[in-house]
Length: 257
Image (cartoon, rainbow, N blue to C red; front, side):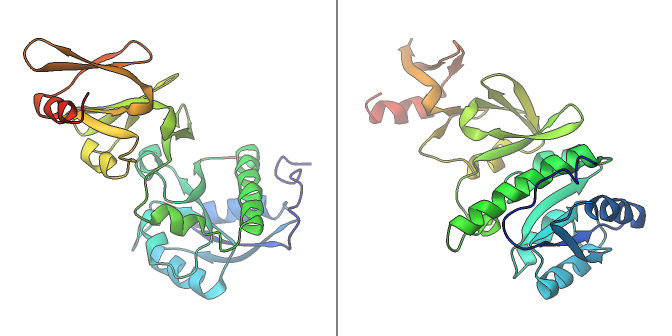
């Protein structure tokens, strides 16, 4: 029995799936793997982004496998145009797309080429998400993620895979040109987006910008220490010391720091 077929069926009825990908070979390969799953029914295939929007709103699937690089509309542009809000698994041959497309409500990201074992892991996440939807009335994962609320996860490159990282585990973010380095508790991750864009999606109650190149997680700050004439340093739990800009230092002093 294949890894995909070995997945236990969820308690509800069969899950309706749409595959959106501009490559016929990729669509056919994914369909063959999904046919081995006894709780999934593939109800449609779309060859481009605009077709995906029309098909999803017409067929009302529970789950969509959505390629990111498609003609007409990118996969990351499709969700915001949908009236129907299914669960989404993004697929991509280019890791940088998944890295920058964080918190779009996706259940998972599959980096091509992927096999039955990796697909089975993604489907396990679908089963968990379906369980949450059944238990919580009016549960809308995608709508919640696309709202103006703060991001809770980042999707980062981990070898040949894309892995979720809890934002709460990040001690501080550092601007590096057009990139951001997320300094987490156990690793450093490079994000291909500007610091200002990331800052707009962070929880301001937890994260604060202390310098034009630094945003810190206040849950990981042990102290703000004054030094010299107007100088200030943020000390983090791991021993890191970061300079606080003079303007931000003045604001912190007004708050009694």
